[in-house]
Image (tube, rainbow, N blue to C red; front, top):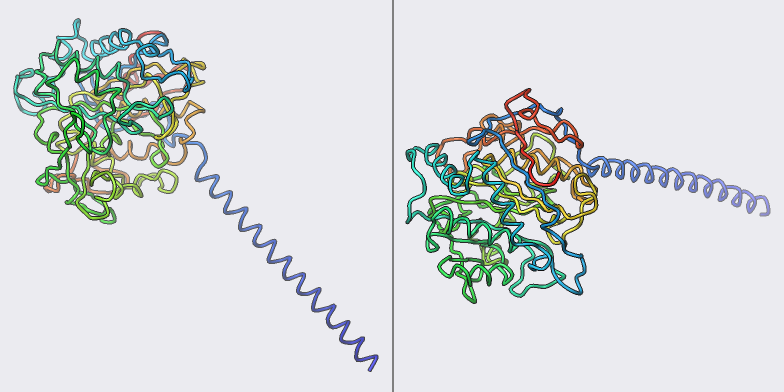
Length: 461
């Protein structure tokens, strides 16, 4: 009996030891799997670095001066103290309207090679009309012009602690240029963001000075008009996994316009890493499904979210931003790409942050960017964001969409981009390349080595 009991104790001990060994092995295996998963995640979310070498342009440069991007920088234009208890960045006492207007003027003249602002606008309109087979003509009264602003974070009543959107100062400078210099009647201008609210910070000064300009948003209350979709003009997606292809519609105020100005902002983004002129048109798409109407009154781009995820999608992936950039009623109507970079934000829902990189050196970005080439201007902005540590969303395949857009005729993804669904695929939408380095910030046309981007820098360096 005693021997039997001892045998059971020894047997139990061996079983326990074996069980412990198995448990230890399982734990080690789990730790190894977790470590591998973490390493893969870190690799996927590592800070972005360009995969293509510097100064190797791809695509076809656009513009009066092909591939030209103008960057005007003046630290005195943006002097907000950052204190959300005492005021907001959008106030005139912090953001100088005169300096913002001067920056826009200089930018327009450098972009077109003109000696006056009036000549600059005439050059922009004439170049567009020649390129679209409309003859060597400038703007004619009666032709509608739409301006797409980015009002993400805007509320009806300004809030010091809210995020960032187009500055009232640069927006007003643009409207004054159009009405007083370019000769566009107020009644021919529409300012809109279909998926957001155009808040009082922008609306009130615009309405006070230019009562004839129509300003539209998703609700259309208090003097704004409610943006309506044109269900005869749809967006078609090359990837069948993107829902509502052919039933994603554009704003009627855009399809009725002859010209468009894409007035974007300088921001990071949690899905796409950056939100610049291309992604600005996420505020220009309407879906008539019940799910889409539950938010933003149908002006809901959620069907495209998975396809712009830079953290999970590899280089050479399809991207619907290309279809927004190339649609005949969006990029196809755009005479000017403008980025309001007086203040930059690290995320679509965050307040502006000062930049540490040169030439900002702990100050606000205080910059204005302009181009006629939609790919070139975003390439420059991506390089700038990539060099800035506060732009924490710069991870993953950030510039994949720029490769796709520059080579839209033969994209790395092999997608057939035909945003109108008319059987005619897109050609190259512009030129993409990366600068030589973050110190010199030079592109191939600056160096005289290629037909890529030319970066003209103005103001304080």
